[in-house]
Amino acid sequence: MSDNKMNLRMWRLVTSMSPELRQQGGQEIIYGYAAVFYDGTEKSEYNWGNGVIERVRHTAFDRVLADPGADVVVTFNHNPDNILGRRSAGTLSLSKDSVGLKYEVLLPQTQLGTELAHLIARGDIRGSSFAFSVVAETFEHEKNNRIIRWLDDVNLIELGPVVLPAYSGTSVALALRSYAMSRLKELRSVVPYEETPPYDDSNWDEQAALARVQEWASSEGSMNWEMYRRAFAWYDVENSEQPEAYRLLHHDIVDGQLVTHKGGIIAAMQAILSTNANVNIPAADLPEVYSHLAQHYAQFGMEPPEADSIPIVVPRLAHALYALSLADE
Image (cartoon, rainbow, N blue to C red):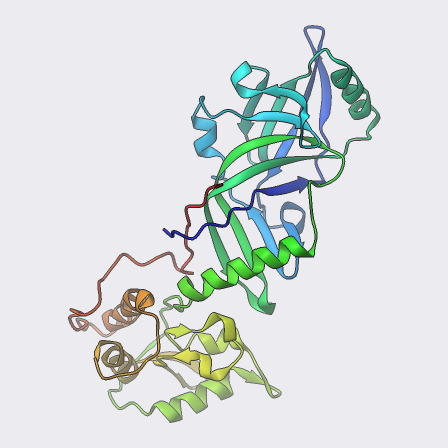
């Protein structure tokens, strides 16, 4: 967890799911989806621009749904003067299915409620949106320098039908991207462990192996950085298209295939455990680097050396995703 706080309340527009209207006991009810979960398609993600994509996990609202005391307000166009209902008053119900977060609100018998019912019936209102603060999120750094922001757990504050997004634009995307890149640089630089065929050779020539990896990962003079990265244990995510950003080579190429080199993992492990070695890796990343290399040791039936100088922790998920506690001021 982190003490970093990004005190921005985020809004997300759902443009593909228009709210609908039905009658129940002589009263009007609006129902629809305030949010959709990512299902592998572009329609279920939000593109902030500037290479930042936002996706909602299926678990994002579980905590709120399980807590009947978590109050949520329904408004029109995110305007608190246009209140339509609220959970604590029993006029809003929330649920989820495989598509997303569903809401039903009993419209008030007011001028706003009457007018909104007519607008929805005519098809003038084409989307819904929700306001939230982040409890847990993760970031992925994909090819083409895209950043994927996953909403893992959120405090749901307010939702409702909207005509237009609450806000959008480059300034938001730039702020979010800057924040994401700073966290990625700090916490997402360990290359995920990958079990490649073991090559049982204790003789390690790092420069020769590096030349083979560079040739293997290149095509027509262009480097495939995702392929190149697989040969190392750590890299500087902000400079991921620079060869000098990569540390602790321990894979090699044999017969055109990426292999785990026994001598390479021993040398890399010695480098991170040596007090004299200058591997230039943040101390916070060393436990995961150690874990990465220790898993390779197991490929050769070897016990990794003791790591008295490294506080061993449970490694993060395969892609080193992280969760941050964030809250409004």
